[in-house]
Image (cartoon, rainbow, N blue to C red):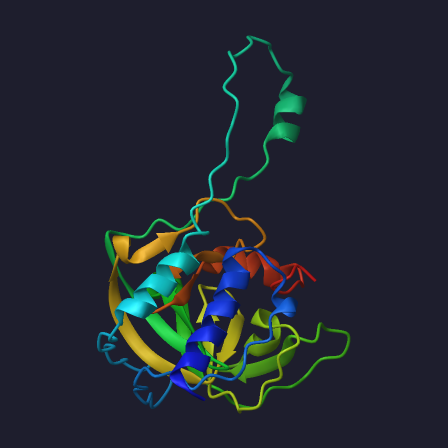
Length: 247
């Protein structure tokens, strides 16, 4: 696939995420990512640092246009507070958990990995471990994206088919190699390749300020055009048995 085709496929996919368009409406082609893949050997390896990718002026302009939709603002009419005593029962009903984005340090390390040609990043503080994928036993009555369970050290790990979850309608044509564990949970998402780790600066991320239809998306790593995962929100969706489109 040409470099122009790769850029267009990534642009269309991430544009759908940032605009909260259903991912099933976008079917990105398999992309052979240009970043150098550093081989990972075993469970929980010490991963290499990614070399900085060369970003052309044209790609920068495309990325700026792509990311311009991330900063979402809400106009709220300001009203004078009314001193009304609300019963305790009503206060409890009104307390709805508010979506909050992740708040890492000014600099934080992240793991980069590839699913069907698309690169994702996860903060190392939210990474529960990396396992080489072994036998996965499917279970009946589960969603299509639930690949099954994998036994690891006498624990049953829930395995998510990442291509099916992140890109509904997209066919996975490559064997998964690793299982990326999410936080302290027993949920893991499959990936095809590990790229490595890199320390990110806070201002390298285009942060989301409200969940929209993608609460699992914390923001975009601007110079690499990849999604930064909000692990806790991703876990909430998985535990509720829904995919990227809430289905």
